[in-house]
Image (tube, rainbow over all chains, first blue to last red; front, side, top):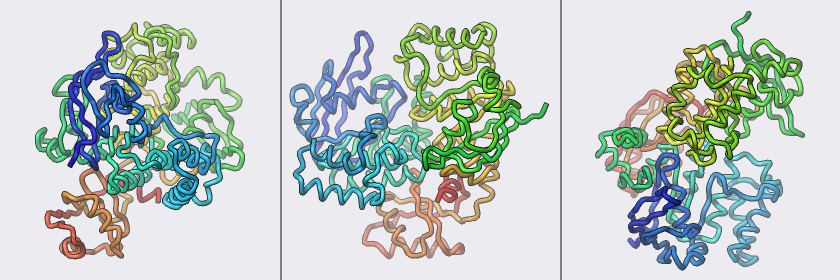
Amino acid sequence: MNNIIEVENLTKKFGKFTAVDSISFEVKEGEIFGFIGANGAGKTTAIKMLCGLLTPTSGKATVASYNVYNQSEKIKKNIGYMSQKFSLYEDLTVKENISFYAGIYGLSFSEIKNKTRHLISLLGIENEKNKLLKSLPLGWKQKLAFLISIIHTPKIVFLDEPTGGVDPITRRQFWDLIYNAANNGITIFVTTHYMDEAEYCNRVSILANGKISALDKPEELKKKYKCSNMYEVFVKLYQDRNL
Amino acid sequence: MTEEVVIINEVTKKYDNIVALDNVSFVTKKGELFGIIGPDGSGKTTLFRILTTLIKPDSGSAFVLNYNVIKDYRKIRSSIGYVPGRFSLYSDLTVEENLKFFATVFGTTIKENYDLIKDIYIFLEPFKKRRARNLSGGMQQKLALCCALIHRPKLLILDEPTTGIDPVSRNDFWDILKNLEKENITILISTPYMNEAKLCDRIILIQKGNILDINTPAGIISNYKETIYSITTSNLYKLNLLLRERESAKSVQLFGNEIHYIDKNKNIKIEELKSYIINSSPENFSDVKIKKISPDIEDCFIALMK
């Protein structure tokens, strides 16, 4: 399998503060890659560099074989991105949001029409398609935001805490959508504070103080740290190192 | 004086034609750590906004510390602490300045109530000169809690204080809340994390403005009547899909590294389930393991919310 992300000694400093400290890893095509860590560990800074939104201080990184230093526009066309904070336009309807983003990504009119129909039926929101986004529950918005983030069939999608604050049932529906996208060949790069969701990833990296302190399959991490679940792994890793 | 800190009596609140709270009633007692659990849009924040006197109910009555939320709103405001869901401190002020500001607004000093916030403030002390906007999410929430406590409120209302906060900081936060219980401060808290719901003395489960259940966590678990099978395999996702196709499947839910499975036939044998899994799919599920388990609070909520 090819690597869709290759990162070597990637570093970002803000003044004297090192937010991301010489991290190295690869993400394979089609993988669900979990990127977890405490608040302030450097997750968002790392993601911003990989999305071409922030220039690294040093190190190397390629995403979909484009260099983050000088091919960031190419990267943006080939990735999807969604976060808890960046969402859709609250004052547009469901349908308008879909056609707006599809248009931005350069889909043709017929593609937009097909995609709109497909997304609305996938989410079962036929009756809500002409409602303003702000009238929908958060869980629906998050599911819609995810599907819109992959509307241009990107090679990889970055999800920054997509399920924050979402109830147990909707979280599981959200992960159905993630698995479905992964099955269709889209690589998933996801951050979460729900440790049961860390179990759903093919591999998980744990970031602490800007460094990767562990990276492996969930079952290997559990074996290594003699824990029964990822929650224990996370707590143990942080406590052992007194972070 | 009664020991009831919050009394909600048949409260209804509508926004245009959306019913946010539908004839809700409950009572919390002094010193209780009371959890309000429900999906987004269930009415949790509306409830908090009524109790903090920021909005009025359309009908019904509500009392906080024996004060009426409509008539006595000034008295309520000075005797409660509130941490809204959105970070609401002054991001341009430092940690120390924020704390001092809130103490002054409530007519007190940091010194006077320092013992109450000491356990939390030690986490913040190293950053006291840092502006609030430059703190991590976990630290911001600890600061918000300090500011809400600085006037020694009798009731503390926390609207999803741990959403977006990492597991270790969440542990710290709950340790702090458990300690506040000893100070006889009543706490009303909402959270989307089911393992946190379990730490409350009592919880209400709310959905679409209606209360589905009020009970202790143990009580909610003991009311659960289904038989749950925990199923594990290396190919969890494929197994999840397979089980959903099964005609007699009642509920199939992923729970981290296992599937929680409920069959319509309560007396189904583990062997029968195992042979179904192994024989009805071209996938290799020979490593499948099945065992009966007791429900956890998340199982109960999923069942109640459906």
